[in-house]
Length: 368
Image (cartoon, rainbow, N blue to C red):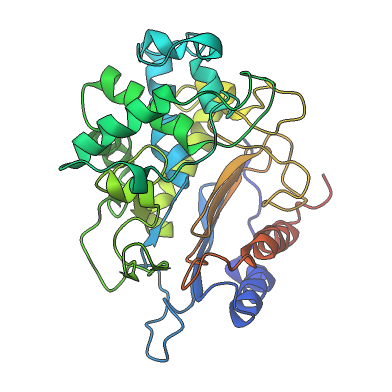
């Protein structure tokens, strides 16, 4: 890809102003924003504060955020891509071939790719943390999996697209059985360490640099340094659908790898074919924007109006997002703790597209 002139951080001031305006309006206490283009950093800023306390520390490049469902693409989908490339995971294979307990009726028709594209028939979420508890996270996981396998499907496979944490919990179990290691070990050895993502991890050591999330009634405290998602917390903080923490800067090598790999770089963890296969719309359900693990731009998308059709991305419940545009060779990371102090704050839904539109306007990417 030919190198082009890249706007400086000064040109992206309006994007920073947009985030500051939303912080002032109470959308989130603070945010870390990172934009990369043509192998260059064009924006890397911490804005606002970690909380609404008067003495709260400012957000910096060292601030660590709970990535929530970015875990799905960062870890679970990437491992699925790696095993697919190695011939260890058959995307068209039925789930029952990998988890024998998941069978009967329409369940026999659920394929691996249906879990990735969120069209398996499984409901999106159940409060498993309140229903099942083991003496150890491993015992809890066994109970979770048994419950998911016994649940009736909510709709026939591939007739609807319903975002499902439960589908990714099943997928994570399959990946652990293939890799013969726990998910956090697989993530570290297969993804984080090879990419030099030193501040990206499950179960981070407690630090004042970690942005707090919700004042959780179930746990009876403000959650800080432990995963916000309750089901993931009951699994010991390591889960296929949530649990990874990171700084924006540490996360940046991951989208860079996908962009370079999609262009055929032999230094990528993944082949161009695998990246394109997983990041294009799956077309398993009419009208669904879902790719395999990833999402693509659609109506009222969190990436705004100017990302190309070849773009792919994902969001996290805590207020995080990652969008990647291969056509424009750009990626945008937005990390916030919008659930602090309560999850009913929905102003992030307006912040995300406004910020992405401002970024793409500054990069002069609004014409295509």
